[in-house]
Structure formats: structure tokens, C-alpha cells
Figure 1 (tube, rainbow over the protein chains, first blue to last red):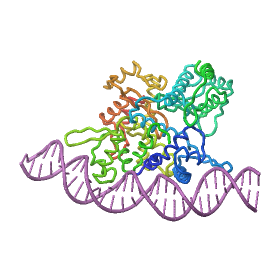
Figure 2 (cartoon, each protein chain N blue to C red):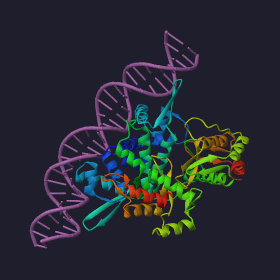
Figure 3 (cartoon, protein in one colour):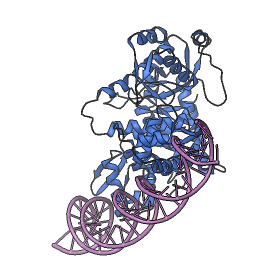
Length: 224
Length: 224
DNA sequence: CGCATGGTTCGATCCTCATCGAAGCATTCT
DNA sequence: AGAATGCTTCGATGAGGATCGAACCATGCG
């Protein structure tokens, strides 16, 4: 019976199975169309459309219209972070998973979190970037050092501090329970990993699987 | 239509207004009885009881029976963290708050987060503890230095690394958007603040208001 | 032992909301 | 222009679940 932020409103949006499946699919970072999301959620197109307008009205999604396609995506990294937090609790209290399936194992090693890399590999990478003084912890902020800037620049990753969105951000990993790198730099690194074909996205999943040579390249560049 | 952790189940538990109010009340850290929670949520006792058993079954609450009283509390700091994340999103997308009320301002300065202090004061404190090398950042972990251990010991705060729960943990602050200190040490510090009467809990709120002299004492000890 | 207090269970009611088919818009392709 | 694709709106249906009164356990008090 108290005012304050309407947490029930937000939570109930996530609380419908169809919508939860949609959001889960969007955690992959790529924006999807209404029909793709309908398929993902296992509901008809009209139903999906109804859900999507509710999520939009709730501020959880953004919409990009391109021609006759309408691409829905998560509204912000903050929303993605909230969903990861919910996933974390669901995992913890969940059905005492008999044994983690193979796909699940791949997810723990490396997966996409909104627009950047997550999982054991990502956590290890952030550790090494600190060790090599390419990044610097400043309170809870993460900053790019001059050495880091030139290092990433040499890799073809140019970072301009753009509006609003920070270059580096810590994002809590639900599987490892430690931080990995988000922000524009985190996104750019994932882009490079995919562009160089070091790894590919598992179809219909957030898992990211490295090829043998790709893994070597990744370790050489980021885990050296 | 995918398996994985049942995020909709967890979110829908938080998604009911009555349950959300209960969880919000429990964010204060103190365990409450069914009747207190019924009052808080603005529902009848039978209704509250029904909600509470659902929250229990969902693993979000713990129950401590003492005589004829049954105290409900949040199941873990992880659950508290999830709720803070949801609050953060609700704040962000929320009704463009006309202007933050007085109670709201007090919440931003200092409030209780489950069992430790949060808000601007708490974030400032963690910063200073790092500056004074009483705590040490190690990757995402926070560790107590020997100097820190003796410092807190001198204040009458003895920390034994007990089972499971870490001594220090970073917890993301939804108002400041930076980390503050959780874990057994964070809890012990809040205990001391209350025990020394430096501050008191605002009734029916998570806000913590310092007395003039209490604030001086707090700043001398933790923000020196 | 009764009686009061705190809490849960049961049953009935009611209402919200998820769902889908059919029809309606909008955009692109031929 | 006409046809096809992608998506939304409308209307009707149905099910799940939130709610409360009343009855039912359990614990503590006199």
C-alpha cells in the first residue's frame, strides 16, 4: 500500500511465459521481428503483437521500423541486467537441475549478454585486461588506459566516447558470479570475435562456440 | 518455447502488487509476521497467507518459527539484488517522477538494503575504505586487508569468515548506480550504526536518517 | 483446562488477461 | 494497379488466480 516505483508492473511484464520467452530471445542482442518472436514464444502472431505492445508501453523494448519490418530489441543494458538477475535467482531456486545439459555447458563457457560477451571466457578476459593495465578500476567505474586505447586501436577497435552510453561497464555474470565487460568496448570486442569468425553464434541460443583456431586467436589477443 | 530456468515463474511471483509490496517491505532486512505483511500489502490475512506460501514455494522467502509467531524474510542477498535490479528498471522507465518527495530524498542519502547500508553515504564509505587501503579490490571480489581487519576490530567489529556467505561483497546501488558494501562486514557496519544510535530507521520505510552528532561520528570513523 | 491470539485451509465469487480467428492497414514487389 | 507479405486491431472465448468470509489448527496465557 506504498507508492514508489511500480515494481509489480515491471515484474508482471516479465512474469508471463510468452513474454519471458521473448525477452529471453532478445537477450541474444539481435533485434527480432514480431513473427520471429511469436515463433520463439510459441504463440500466434496476434497474441505476440499484443504482448509486444505491452512490453513497449512498459518501456522494456525499443522499436526500429525498417521498411515493412519492425525490429524489437531490449530497451537498455539496464533491462538486460535485470533479466540476468532474475535468471540468476531462477537458476538458484530452480529445479535442482539434475545435471547441466551440453548446451547449458556451452552457455557457461561463452554466451552473448545483450550485446557483449559473457561467461567464463568473458570473465577471464576482463581479469587479464586489468592485469595488463589496459583497463583500470576506478571505484566501480572501469576506465580505458592510454595503453589500452592504443592496444585496442591496433586491433581495429576504435572507441569514441559517445553520448550517454559508457565505454566500459561491469556486468555481473550469473553463471560465474563475477563481473565481465559491458559497454561500447565490450560490444566492440564481441563484434570483432564474430567478424573474425573466431566463434559463431549457436542457432536459437545465446551460446557462443569458438572454433579451435578461433579460440587460439582469442587467447593470444585477449588472454595473453 | 525453450527450457532453461523458469524466469517467468520467478517474475510472476514479484509481479503481483500484493506480493511486490510484501517483498518491498522485506527489503528493509527485518523479518516480518504474516499479519504485518498483510497490513503492508493492504490485503486480508487469508490472502496474505496464500501469497506467502506461494513465495515460499518459489524459494524467495525463508521462514523462522518462534513460538506462535512465524517470521518471514527474504531468502538470500541474491533475491534482494534481483529486487533492487527490478526497482532500478521501474525507476528508469517509471512515471517520469514529477519531483522526488522528501522521503525519497532521504532514501537516496541512506537506506537499508536487505541487511546493509545503501545510498550515497554507503557508496562514499566504500570509496574511502578503498582509499585508506582497509579494503582491497581483487578482480570483482573485495577483500579485507590486515590493516582493515585490525581497524574494524578496534571498532568492535569482529569478522570471522563463516560458512558460505562472503565477508565483503559489492552490491549495485540503484540510486547512485555505483557499488556499495554488502556481505557480513556490510551488515556488521549497519548494526554498529544502529547500535550506536548514530542513525535510526525511518518507520515503515527503508530510509535511514542520521542525527547531527551521529553523522559526525559516522564521518569521523568511516569517511575520515 | 478453557479462552484469546496468530495463522492457515476451504469454498465460492469475480475479474483480469491470455489466446486465437477474422478482418483491416501498411509496405514492397511485379 | 494488383498481389503478397508483415503486422496490428477487434471481438469473443476461456482459464487462471486474486480475493475474502467462515471454519479450522496451533500456541501461549490465566
